[in-house]
Image (cartoon, rainbow, N blue to C red):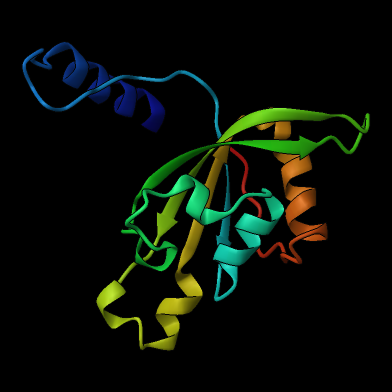
Length: 145
């Protein structure tokens, strides 16, 4: 019921969107899954597991510790399949989660900071296994839609 209401609202926004506006609205029906990586080493863990360097995907004048809350970064990553020992290139979207940046001296803000990884469900198991085995992540909660 919630999905129907959200899609109705988004459809209305897209249909009423003016072509001369600076806002680009599209509706995606592509399924996505989400893994959240949080904590003091989340930035290093994400880079290590997905095998990239932050300086290669960020603009030249931005430091990874200065990325704004909600920033979206697209990245093609190699995900090793746990079932057939092959690798395939898949796109993931990384979303920065940095609430209360101005109060970073408070320890509770560090624990909830990190990255959301959005990806196609077909690589979910392999990506989860990589985070646990290679990144040393600990699954705290799992939710299904």
